[in-house]
Every structure is written in C-alpha cells, then in structure tokens.
Figure (cartoon, one colour):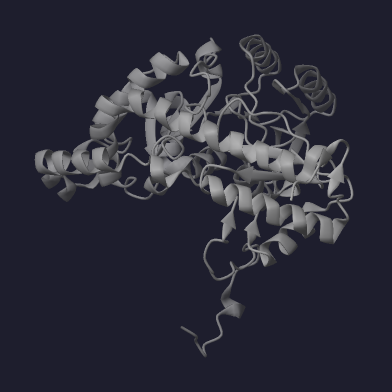
Length: 410
C-alpha cells in the first residue's frame, strides 16, 4: 500500500534506517538462528496444545493467565528444575521472568542498566543482535579477544584495569560462555571462576547469555556463571528458540529482585504470549530431556556435512575451529575476501551468509570472516550452497580452486 501523505517530516531524529521489504529466503540460506524444521517435535506439540487448551484454555480470558506479570507458573516451575539440573542454577519461580524471546531480554536488561554514553565489555566476536542494539543506544562497546576457550581473561583483566584508570566503570560484561555465538566455543569452568573473580574485584555485573547452551554435542556443560557467583552479580538469560523452535518467541531472565522489579516496570506489553508458554510447559515436562539429544545428534551430522563441503570446495582457504555445539560455524577466508562484498555477490547467486564485521567489535579482524548457520538447510542444500559460494569467491576475489594440497573435485 502506498500513501500520498508525506510522513517523513514527522519521523523523530534517531530512528533506525528503514527496513527493506521482505523478499523471501535465499535458495541456499545460511543466515539467522533458524533451526532444523525436521527436528521440530510437531506431534508432541500438537498433543500438548490440545491437552493444555482443554485443561486450562478458559484462563486465556485473563491477562497473564492470572499467573502474574512474570509468566505462566508451570513453565517457570519447569525452568527452576531444568536450570538446576543442567546449569547448576539455584533459583525460585520468583527469580524468573518469561519474555518474548531472548531479544526482549536484551532490551529489558539494556533499558534497566544503560544510558547513552555508558560503556560495556563484550567478547570481540559476538551476537549481532546485541551489538546493533548498543549502537542504537549510543553505548560504547569495548571488545575483548577470544581464543578456543572463549573470552581471554588476561585481556579482560587488562581492559578492566585500563577503564578503571580512566575513571570508567563498565555497566556489564556481556558473555556467551556456553556455545559462543559465532565461534561455538565453551568457556571452561576455571575460566568462568576467573571471570567471576575479576567482575567482583571491579564491581561490574556479568550479563550471561545462555541461549545456545542446550545444544552441546557432548551433552555435558560447565555450570552457568550465574551458579558460580556468590555475590548475585550475574543476570542470566536463555531461550527455547534453539532447543524447540525460534518462531515460538519464548525466552527467560534469571535476575535478583532488585533488577527484576525494575525490568517488570519496563515490560509494558501486558505479558508475553500465553498460549506459547502453556504449550511449552505441557510439552517440556515429559519430553524436553529426550528431545534435546535427538536434536543435537541431527545438528551434528549437518555440521559434519558443512565442514566436509568447505574442505572439498575451499581446501585450506577456509579456516575454522570445530564448534562444541550449536548451529553456527565461524569461517575465516583469505585476507583478500571482503565478506560484506561477498554477501552481496553471494546473494545474487542465491546464497545468503552473515558477513563477519556484523558480528564483531573489531571490523578489520573480522573483514574476511563469515558465519554460516547449518541447522536450517538440508544436507543437499549445504553441499550445493557451499559449491556456489566457492564459485563466487573464486570469481569475485580470486580465491584459488586449488589451495595447498587440497584439489577441488569435479
């Protein structure tokens, strides 16, 4: 629909750039946090929906199902049990807030703690959704380098000391310690303990994003940083987007009441979607523990297909560390490849990728890197899409068909 009325003079200063019209997913889509459609537990979700609606459907007539602003009580009760079992977090239903996906969690934490000109500490490569929000808020982001075990504590200690010497107290340290996005690393317990120690020493809270923590190949994960902090200076967020389905838009926050009460005052949407919460609670209690290993097994096979395809098409020109879980592979291409330009050329050829600079606090470090989501495409689409991507890299950036001792197969 077009309008002859000119709204442009009425837009306030500072609005984000306008969105482009949606034109559909690319033929070979390696973007976003989309999951494997074959692994959505459809039959059990249908069963749970029918059962919970028959039992409690009339409670939909009341905002929040009469369970209060923090969310549907049976779902919070499930999370109390799950977080204790999986992450070592001891919390009660009163410490939990159900939100509309982890993105709303990010917005609520930021709105509670940040104002323009504030400083926060991030992992150098990090979640684009977090970084773009902070740019919009006018917040300074200081990146800390990563290695195969996540955020480097020597670099964090130096960063904290430098900021303190300049009279700057960061508002939080944001970390994705369990299946880091985009690198797929898992921070060991000893490093988590050092992170807690440094945060306590400098009086800075930790913002722990645990959205991918269910998808660990081994099924074993270190305790959450929240579980290791004795001072209560950790805000923990998680999601059902990666474990069940992203379109459900259900996430959660674990936080002390001092912070929770402020976030509740800012959550002015009259409650996150109730039906989704009801269905998840009915589904998760009997099925979650058996569903996740089946999901991670399927995802692991897709990762293998992606790594094989990259080795076949790029040889040593594509460098990557094998992730410990999740749905993403962080890939380094030769230095001459500008992945922001590659994104455009690849999209024209039917392949969508996430260019590295959008996922980093250091644009030059990440200029030849890209993030590939392997969960959504089929095995065949992964193989075909990587072949198309390699052809674009050869044509646009001169990436050799033969690299080191690996020869491209016909």
